[in-house]
Image (cartoon, rainbow, N blue to C red; front, side, top):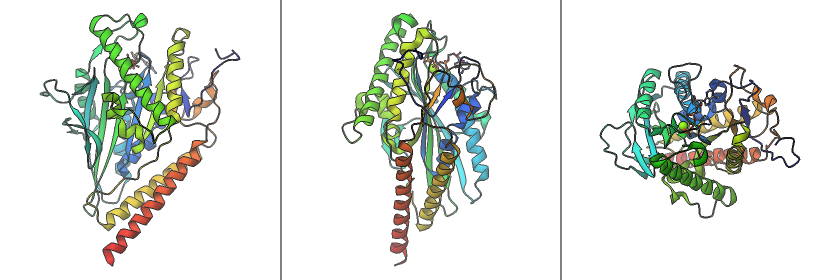
Length: 398
Ligand SMILES: Nc1ncnc2c1ncn2[C@@H]1O[C@H](COP(=O)(O)OP(=O)(O)OP(=O)(O)O)[C@@H](O)[C@H]1O
Ligand SMILES: [Mg+2]
């Protein structure tokens, strides 16, 4: 396909893992999302979503092997990163981290951490502090890796999984694992952030999965909700101020404030290099390319029960986040593009950033067009935050 003159070219931030044996470890994939994880401690909402055909490695990437330090997925690494970052913050803040695990199975939202939900469907609701939430989902405090591992195992053990011809443990539901961070500032103010890992069920073709009966019906609903997600992505990319069909599925409704721009988001496209999967791979890459075209405006964390000093803290956090983004962009200047693509392969333990040279046939052109616009948005928000802070100081003191 790549030698053909009609080859289709895609540009992404990073391409990880190639069949030539030059793949990257889970740790290297995590490097791409580290700054999103860190920003959650400063009140931002973050989202890491894995998309791709069945069996392409979505669950492996996000959850991986919970008991192996080499193969642990982004979830375990995110918690470790949060713990590390909390240790670095020395302003007297105290932190509390909760986890919630829900699945969206056949348009029903189920709490996977609750032992007595009785299978009732939960609803997506607007919350004043956290934005859109799954109302009633159990939140359990998590203090260390061991607790995270136990709770994740407990939740995923309840997740609907089936064996198909393409994946022995195929996820039959979309799973949303959320780490909810509450930060109490030294002056008593509160700041909230959350990191949501979205492990989608994979798109599938019945002729390949040979799914029958319930599994076949599940497959139809999985494809339907993924189509709804595709429609939302298309609508956001084409005309973000027009009608966006979030309410066409529970999945898109639950992800509304993520897709619509209130969160910092990394999309990982998992795809197969096999020639027999070319059609699915192309479709996944097209989805990634469309999603990459969505221009979002990053929301600076808003105050909760804030006095003027909390506003100042938030301003400092926004400036800190701005600084981190600038540093990250400077670091990545040699590389180009903005999303992450992953193809299952072996690992070789190279450092972050090494994947770009291994792109083989895939086009790696720079797509830095949106960077200045994004930076501009961050700058504008920082200026707006300064003005709000100034205003509040004036009101407070005059
Ligand atoms: N990068 C990788 N390295 C090693 N093993 C992998 C990798 N990616 C996937 N696998 C393995 O391939 C199998 C299928 O992966 P996984 O279950 O993560 O797919 P999936 O995309 O979640 O599929 P589904 O949509 O059916 O749930 C698993 O056994 C997993 O461990
Ligand atoms: Mg899966």
